[in-house]
Amino acid sequence: MSNALSTATLAAVASRGVPVPDYDRTGLVTGIVHLGVGGFHRSHQAMVVDRLLREGKARDFAICGVGVLEQDRRMAAVMAEQDCLYTLVTKHPDGSREARVVGSIVDYLFAPDDPAQVVERLASPETRIVSLTISEGGYQADPAAEGAPLTAFGLVVAALRLRRERGTGPFTVMSCDNLAHNGAVAREAVTSFARDLDPDLGDWVTEHVRFPSSMVDRITPVTSDADRAATTEALGVEDGWPVVAEPYVAWALEDDFAAGRPPFEDAGVTVVPDVGPWERMKLRLANGGHQALCHVGVLAGFRYAHEAAADPGVAAYLTAYLDQEAAPTLEALPGLDAFKDALLGRWRNPAVADTLDRIRTDSSDRLPAWLLPVVVDNLAADGPVRASALACAAWARACEGYDDQGRSLPVLDRAAAELSQVAGAQADDPTAFLAQRPLFGDLVDEPRFREAFLEARASLVEHGALATVARFLDGGE
Image 1 (cartoon, rainbow, N blue to C red):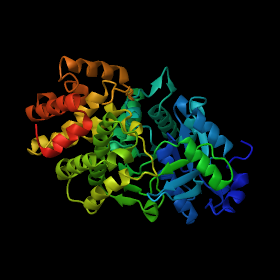
Image 2: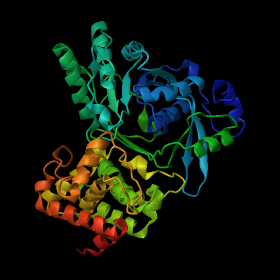
Image 3: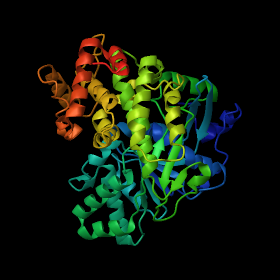
Image 4: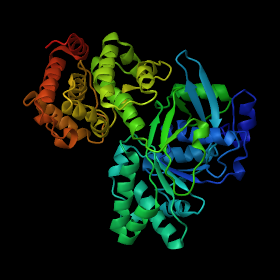
């Protein structure tokens, strides 16, 4: 782009009333290396650091982004062209938009082209925090192949080995992924990989590296061409990859760091000794609720979250899931009711235009982690499970590949082939999908949940999603 967003064009952007970084980016120290720079990181963690930098704080904690996957090559090109600057656009329900240019990312490395360079950056004494948004599936990957660190955890372990050998000391691994106990999951992955490489290294990691858990929340839909065009109009220059998000943002973070941290609390982060209650609140209400929304919604023919959530029947069904099934499994927490009660309004925000396809992508990773714990707890407590069973049945029905109007409905999942095959077997065996123990554990053996699932599935087949929701609300068979 000849007229791209960059350091050289910031003054022109500022002249149009758009806030730009008012701090000297050249004097910042990259104390954070972030693996997996996508929309969510840029609307969340990078935004928080930018807010601190604008207040003259956290100058030792600027961010170096790292692309880990081949699909990150486009982001690498945009970051290089734009001096790592990008626009964050907040979309309000009334249709108004607020744009600001974020400058907290000051460097970007692309691991597939030069993994050794990334390892050296991670091993640098300046690096004090390594943060992650690598998606739920990224925690299952092998760390290396033929000795080369090819994955996020492979890179992290290779760097920790160098730091131990050089006496640099540990860094903190800070997961910002939507996983229950994400810090503990990251700890297990890193220490296991380190121990396989060198038992002494594994012991050193266990003793010295810290893995705080966090709860993160901000709806960040995929950037559309219309978003790019509107951003260009607002800035007067082109941004190759702006990020759009809802106004709401939350982050609860455990205060467990090996080498210091920015004053995150000064930017609105809730820093706590144990993030578990906040984590469960978000995963079971917001993320579990998203799973209840998206599969019923796509079967009914909706494309966007706000369309589905605005349907009175779907809204009442979601309220039932949140109030009657998810919330009772959570411990008392300040702000829980306010968080829960705000969800429908957030999902109905038409300006965000969050697609149901985005929400339902990789449900084989997401639904078991976010919604099924609600089922397990309610079965143990003799609580209701019908709303959760309907969400699961809708997922199983959607994996058959068609919506209620008979239109093609692609299975958007890393396990798409397997899911499609087992979903197709439901015509002869209605429990075929539910019987997949890697997904559902032993729930097929729980009569109360199995019957609710089968009842919901039969209704989805015969009557469709919206009629099934109405039957659910009536409490009828």
